[in-house]
Length: 309
Image 1: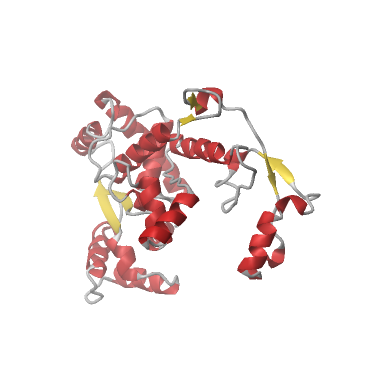
Image 2: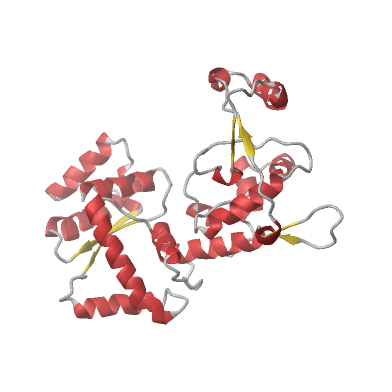
């Protein structure tokens, strides 16, 4: 249990998740289900007095992990649910709540079964899920989520994914009078990966730019070719370099749509446009980037749903 709680705490602290919700069954000890749940609310309000022994232990774990106790507890909650077979009334209530979440209310019972089976695996693995990964789990099982109440993180993430897919579904090429579908007209390409030299991190800006523009002059004996759609998953930080019209923007649109199809929130923006806003409007990089990337999305504060900084 502690492993799951601390995993959620780290996610909240680092901004990887907006809300860490730990669901516990009716058989969980009262010290966790009620005592720690109330302690978290108290710490979130800036109070550390009159905590239970479990609350004190949790506070100490946060301190040892160098996590902000107030920030973590403001984005963390423990929800006690009755999910045993004997708790028929509570299960029916949960299924009724799921009906309001599903695109097809008739799928609510199957969604409950999927969540229950997944909960058993999480207990076995001592792992946890956040609201976004729950949405991905249901989607993987062919269970659609209604795009109604944007206050629900799962709904907001689904809405952002649908919007991202729509906005990255087409591309244009010279000589063709209409936009082409990325799904139907995509021609697979490969990327040549060249890892940076070890001293790149300590190089100055001028030297870093020289290496960037001198890409084709560098030794590529140790390079390898990959599918560009693996960028972001296996190569977490990357710069895509190619000449004009080679397909950089098209690759990134395809990548954004691929992530969104897997219900992973993603943002894409033209850095040229970002630089223009920074220069002309005095915006910070983050302000300009998110306004261009997500300003037209139907989800308020959509950047909070992104899985990382």
